[in-house]
Length: 178
Image (cartoon, rainbow, N blue to C red; front, top):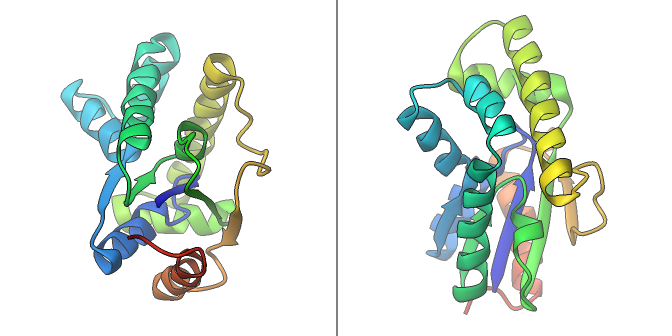
């Protein structure tokens, strides 16, 4: 089985992916970590690097290529990232989207990265607009279209362990990781 977990910044994709990866003892491949590492390598903030990636589609395309390659070659792993569900074109895949209201996501981002609510709120809105524009331009993907996902979960309703358990039940019903 291949599991994809996608969602906007602060929706809990990384946290829940790590919990599931540990629970099932399967590899986790995170597009966000790759993006953050690339931003660090370029000496830029996420917002600066996002703006840079707008003018250089090779950044997004490289991340996408890596995820597509992994999705086509590897079984029993979790692919986490905004476009992970789109990058996985295999038969045995469970595609999940995690969502939460913007204010909830901003509070989570503040816990993780620090900053003021207004500052993080504005930078998150800019980052999401930037990413949405890039994904539409590069791939024709509309992130507001949930039709490709098998399961959409509002993470503001439950804590991270409860989300993990909800997803675990879905995974196990489908036969789980072998």
